[in-house]
Length: 249
Image (tube, rainbow, N blue to C red; front, side, top):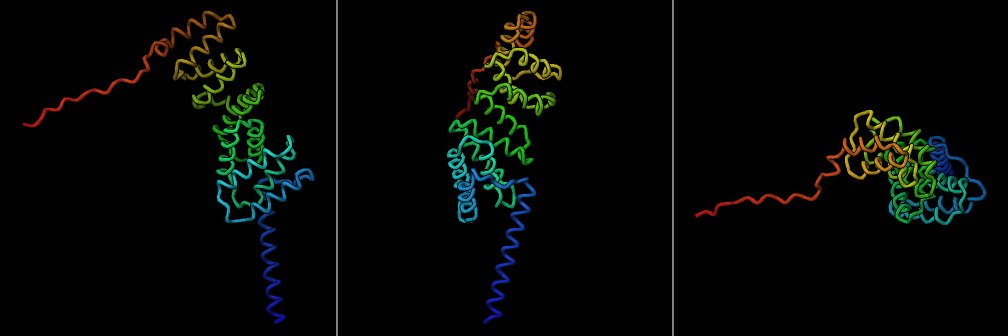
């Protein structure tokens, strides 16, 4: 009987050691810091929630969003909560975080979007053009256009030859809304230097208006003339041709 009890105790100890080692490995891998006393209650709640293996991924993302929205506006508290949320995962839950970010965007919680993305990037995760574009948009919506420019300049600006037009369009729109005419025209000129042609009329008009605001009327005329084909392009959908079929006699 004693042997059975001892064997059970030994098995429990091994499981505990394995669990602790796995958690420690996750903490080292993703640079997770111990949460501060400010987030103690929240972290405990998340730890209990994360241990359960019967919770759908959608519910995990919803739970994270609800928890984040209930937190005080403190970087330390938010980062500590996110650290606790991810600590139990063997693989970094990038898909769950993306789902949570979409929910936060839908709720227009732009400040939280910024915090989550910055935390994710601090772990070396999600370092893609799409993530930086999402961060830039959130910063602009959070009335931090100067910081959005800094992210663009440091993370994307060196890739004018390949950065997708979708991101360029987004940044041009941000510059335009915030009357940042110099930055807008410089961005466009960098794209032109790589023979990148704007795909739509709205970009041309914004650039032309920016040149006008700067008093660079010759450049405005040059742009309007060079991309005139976009300004006069008929974008109405063409009607499908009718094919005549002879009736069989």
